[in-house]
Structures are given as C-alpha cells and as structure tokens.
Image 1 (tube, rainbow, N blue to C red):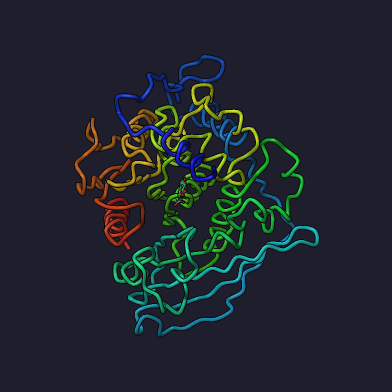
Image 2: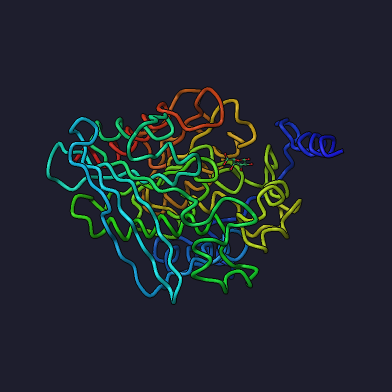
Length: 387
Ligand code: GTR
C-alpha cells in the first residue's frame, strides 16, 4: 500500500510544459499599498523590507539575531596543508544564549600565495560530512577545495547538522535550543532558517579574521543547501555573492509553475524545513503573496548564480531561469543589467559574465567541479580578479 501511495504521489507531479497552469507573478515593484517602486530609495526603505517580512512570515520563519555571546577558537591549524599551498584553520564558533550553546565547526583553507586578505566561498554542506573533512581523505567534486585554493579563493565549509539536524524528529537540537519561543510561532524559524543563521555566524567570524576579505564572501549551497544560501544572502547583506545550485522548489524555482516538486510535496516530505504558515499554501501556490523571483530580488544589487542539471526536472530548470529573469527589474533600479538571454541557454552553455548568472549542466542532481569552475569564473568576473 505504501509503495502504491508513493508512486501515485510522484506521478501527481507534472513534468509536461504544456500542463503548466497560467499564472500571474506577484509584482516585486509594487508595494502593499499599491505604490509603484521607481527608485532605490523606495525599494530599500519600503518594498524590500515588506518582501523580506513576507518571506519570513509565510515561508522561512524569523531570523533571531540576539545572543549573549559569540566566541571563536582555532582548535587546530596547519600551514602546510594541500602540499603547502594552503593554511588550514579549524575554527570552533560558539554562540551562547542563556545556558544554551551552539557550536559551529568551520573548516577553512586559505591560499598561501600572498599575504593579502582572501575572498572566500562558504559552503553550507547538506551532504556527507566526509565532503568537507579537513583532512581531505575524500576529495569529492561536491567541494573541490583544492581547485578554489589554486584559483586564489579561500574554501570554507560547515555542516548543517551543527545548526539543525536534517530530520523532523530532531531538527530542534541546535539553533532552536537558543530560541525555543520560535517553536511556538507559526512564523517561527525551522531548519532552513537555522542553516542560514549559521552562515551569518560564520560571516561574523570572517569579519575578524585578517586573512579573509569579508567584503568578498560568496555563500554557496546545493539543493536544500541552495535554498538556505539564498535565504542567507537575502537576509544578510554582508554576503557579496550568492550561489544557489540546483535549489529547485522554495529555492530559486518559481512555485506557481507547479512543475516538478510542489509546495505540498516539500512540506510533506520535509515538514521541518519551513515555517507552519507555509503549509497553508499546499496546493494553493497562487495565494502566496510572493514567489521565488522576489527572493532573488532581495539579494539585489549583489550577484546571484543559480543552476540546474539537465536530468533534474524535479528542480524545474525553466522555472529557475524565469525566476532570475523576473528579478531583473529590481537589479535594473541599480542600473545593473543582466546578460541572460530571453530564453534559457542551451545545456552546458554557462552565462556567468552577468549580475544574474545561470547554467544548466548536463547530468544529474548534484554539484560538481563543472559547477564550481563556473562559480569561480563568475566571482573572478565580479571581483575583476583584483585580489
Ligand atoms: C529532495 C527535495 C528537494 C531538494 C533535494 C536535495 O528530496 O525534494 O527539494 O532539496 O532533496 O536537497 O538534494
């Protein structure tokens, strides 16, 4: 019976472009009081805070920023890591609130090619911990730290389980211990919010590490991690660049297309990711006051790179592309014009010389050295190699 139910559910997801319903996206540049946003000032003072609040209230939950204490301890370091190319720091970030503590274990490889502060890619690791093991016994494409270092970037990573274990039965064992009141609120933080919160605490650390250029921090994540990287960059404007790899539903893809994974499905499979209010939109995508193009717009004018994989229709490549395209008008307020063509580029034709960047890699749902290679070119382009 279980198997039959599961198959019926999976089949209920649409993969046919002709069956995408007609929809109207909410307008990023019209305020709740029907005022048209024509300049940066109205965007930043009125509409941006409104949209941020809508995402907090209806999807990702609140982002509490208070705590009694934060401390940083280098628990281990090695100046001869990666055959002498990198300085490895293992950093324990401890955040205390009342008698509760959250500990983030940050792995950080800093290139040794000069003494200048280095730009960094921070990965929110949602997969196996071995991918980001400081000893590099496993060198997976999911985190090609050597490649980042060879290109002059520091490589940093933490694991989501330090903030909120990725399971409905124990996701509260982390950040939510500091903020138990969040659990009582329908717009309270849950796991994705906790992971994004963790990225901001790592940002706090970067701001006081002299080897790191805290003005050049790219926050990156894959899939559920890419939903968190977008939410982190939307919330915390200190992140200079956002990378959202194959993030799909409630990440970079438009919900209203109802293509591949849908809200009802994600809320059923992962009830611990988004707030309680989000469950009201199960099978009611059209009644959401936002769609995901507005999440990307919250990152403006900072660069965003979203990706897909050709065999990963679950994450709706077309819907991801349309999300970027529909965020363009907010970037235009800042006179930042994207180089994205009107319709999606071919598979394996990355568009990275652009404020809003995109590629659809041939293959499966994953993050690979192909993806990272393009993220590096994207960062090089925006930082103008000036490092
Ligand atoms: C899937 C989920 C997606 C995506 C993915 C992942 O099961 O439906 O939304 O987050 O997991 O994280 O790899």
